[in-house]
Image 1 (cartoon, protein in one colour):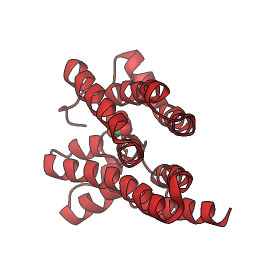
Image 2 (cartoon, helix red, strand yellow):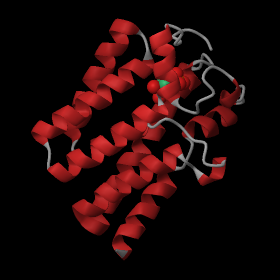
Image 3 (cartoon, rainbow, N blue to C red):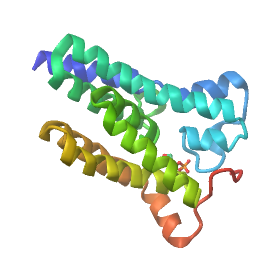
Length: 195
Ligand code: G3P
């Protein structure tokens, strides 16, 4: 129980670092929360036109999840790493520092998956890139990639890991409810279009 709480707190602390916000502030761009979708993630950072910043946001928001998982695995074992993954994901979505208004969890989902069982992160990346190339919607790519990751986990991974990823994917889909509405209405912004 104590180890679980520590793993959760470790994950949350790392997960709640909002790289998109920090990097755009350092670079002196417009507040990303006032442009495009208003989200703090890499997709919205890209709408500032700064590709390097968007890439760094993706990397930071993903790797904070990977790092949380790897540290927790060392300190607390496999179950601890699952709890840290949950903590990191929730930290990214609901950072106390930003009044609990964080991101939608795509990069952090990828990062924790990479740390927990990397072949599933490959599945995620391949599906994301394929769907993004075909349709040019970041949100649709993320929705498909997370679903594919859970399906792949059913085949490749333990039931505990599969359950965790299914929970994270369900939360991620809920966080994308406005995107899903826009996709259905045909009004979602495409990758490359300015917000
Ligand atoms: O979660 C990132 C992407 O799926 C959606 O981002 O800014 O278009 O809402 P955004």
